[in-house]
Each structure stands twice: as structure tokens, then as C-alpha cells.
Amino acid sequence: MQVLNGEEPRVSRLTDLFRKSKRPLLIPYMTGGYPSFRGCGELLAAFVEAGADIVELGIPFSDPLADGPVIQAASTAALGAGTRPRDVLRLALEVSEAGCPVILLSYLNTILAYGIEEFFADAAQSGVMGVVVPDLPAEEADLLSGAAKGEGIDVVLLAAPTSTEARLKQIAASASGFIYCVSTTGVTGARRILRADLPDFLARLRKFTDLPLAVGFGVSSVEQVRAVGAISDGVIIGSALVQMVAKAGNLADAKREIGAFLRAAGSELARLGSDPV
Image 1: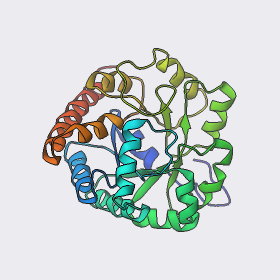
Image 2 (image 1 turned 60 degrees about the vertical axis):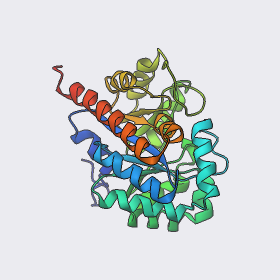
Image 3 (image 1 turned 60 degrees about the horizontal axis):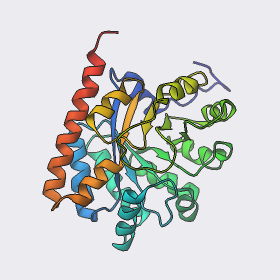
Image 4 (image 1 turned 90 degrees about the vertical axis):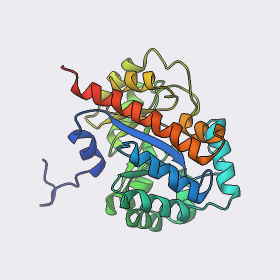
């Protein structure tokens, strides 16, 4: 380990989680405050009970450019019910106190409006290990990384299959914790078929970084979880879970369906970890 100015560099807790795991990590997502504050808390508890390795919790935003209609609708509903960033931090605290690592997804304007220093200080108090910022370009990562690292939090950047070699190199140089790899172009949303060139994309990115690579956007079936887990360090499942909540007749049904899905997904990832190399 390189030592700078007599001090060892900070070891990312997120990176450690990935590297110590013998299998790809299961990372379910839910929009904070959806379908209600209490209901969201119950869903997150169901995530933990079903074996989530990390919970990703979204701060609802009025103009979520990276999100498709399912998560947009959930954000609109959560905002309409009065959900604010501090409410989402309360939910994050519940997850971390339950013993499960938690990361946030937040658009940049939310953090700026909150106040950068205050946001990361409060996030740290809530047990947050990382913040995914979908609209933060790699060249502007320094806007947040200083305050974040001061609180022991990683700023997680996104990389897309359409990124050039130069762009991937820049993302790798600015990223921390892990890199959120977009499985397809466009916005979030469940998809029947993922890109055939996804393995090539991850291979290109791995040339520039030894950070863990987690794949999200479009993963919607247990079969896709296994396929993605076979080539990555973590699988992020978002819209498919939010859609289960939207379509369920009640919260109890949603929790049962989500629990069954996540347990099946976790079993597939466990098999990958036990398969001989």
C-alpha cells in the first residue's frame, strides 16, 4: 500500500466488501419513501431479510434524467407524499442499523441544494458508505469527492457501454468504491434482453481499474442476475423491484414477491461463488 505524507490512504469500505466476498454481491434498489415512508422501511427490511449484500436507496428527484418511467413514477409518488432527503437518510439509518451496508442514489442538484458538506456529514451519520450520482461527470467528481472522503464515503461514478477508451480511463481515475456499469444505453427499466457486448464493455473498463464493477440498468430476471454475476462483481436490481411494488395488490404481496425474487437471485450468485474456476 502506498503511503503519502506519512499517512496510509483511506481504505474504501465498499471496495473491501466486494473484495472480501467470494461471490458477486446482490444489490437491490428502492426509491426512498415509496410506496410510503413506513412501507419503504418494510420493503428495505425485506431486502435485508432476503439476503441483500448492499441496499441502494434512491433520493426521489423531480427530474430524474437517468431513470425510466417506473422509477420516475415512484419518485413522483414519493415526492407527492412529502418525502425529503432527510427522510431518506432516516431510512438509510434503519438499514445500516439492521447490519446491512447502504448506498444512496442522488442527483447532483439534490446534494447542492442540501449543501455538500452537510449532506455528506449527515449521510455518514446515517451509515451511508457511498453515493451514486448519475449526472456527475467524471471531470467534475472533485466537486463532491473531497467532502465525501472526509466522511469516509465513496462517490460512485457510472460508466456506459458507449464510453470511449479515453472516457473509461477518466472515469476509472476519478472513481472510488466501485464503478456502476450501465448494462445498456438509455434510462433505467426492466429489459427482456441485455446487450450482447456487455462482457466486452466490462473487459474494456477492467483495463483501466482494479475497482469492483457492479452492473445495473435493466436486470429483471433471475437468469439475467446469473448472467451478469458471471462477469461482474455485483448485480444491481432496481426497476424490476419497484415495478413489483407498483403492480402488487398490497404491501404484503409485494414483500413476498420481492423476497422470493431476491432469495432466488442470491442463490444463483452463491452458485457462481462456489463454481470451480
